[in-house]
Image (tube, rainbow, N blue to C red; front, side):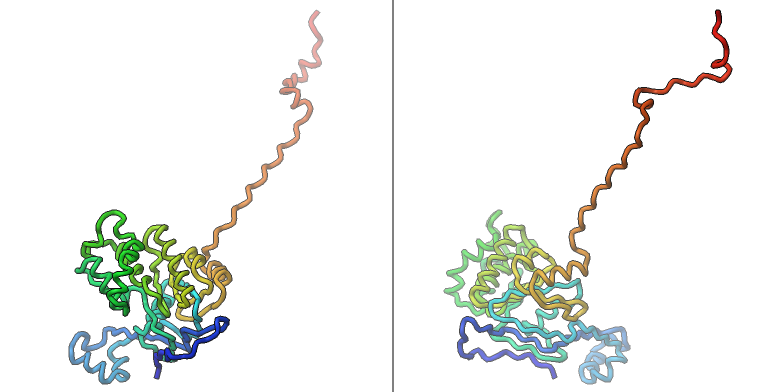
Length: 313
């Protein structure tokens, strides 16, 4: 039986030189079950049957198993920023949700020291409320007090850049673009120092200035002894932010190591390396010209009979 276990928080303090594990993933498998087109689809009786007699009815009802993560193991340490890379559908976001405790594991165990926070999930925002109310709601959902939220409110708004083009923080969030909402979620989540912060594609939103602010904030979180996981398809964001990278492909951990080493292998796999500039072909040497050709065009040859005829007197 797979388990999700949170490590006790009353562990004795360690020396600064000691590496302190914050997340331990031990031979984890994650499996999705998708209901197919078996008999009784959609009926309440068939649904109850699937719950009570799941193993017996899985095949009959057309249940498909999707093995999203396969036998993945790694240890994350305090102060690390770890990038998760891989092609679409490789299991990156699924693994983050499982580390956050939102998805059960089929096999293996996940241990955490502290409470992992998945960006945009713990800060449960409501589209009908204004951005201002959502800042307070998100902060309370993360365990902050009203006094802490009030003290950091202006900093959150300024960081998100919501009010750069108008007083949008007082409007309902349903009026925001997807980029504005994502920036506000990141700003709320990053306003607290987390034990483990899980960021899924948040740095891909917003302009370059917001991405720079986000990368700087992640560095600050690392300095406060937190651990940051970042899922991104941006090689630049991974290189600028992370010192370690996990490469997942088809649910399997392909490589775990220093950022540049793993990114080099991944780019070779996906063909994302910048192509080398092709050398310009050397000009072909011109054929050497005869002296007669250099002096000018040759005079036309006279016919033989004209050449032998005597000159008129």
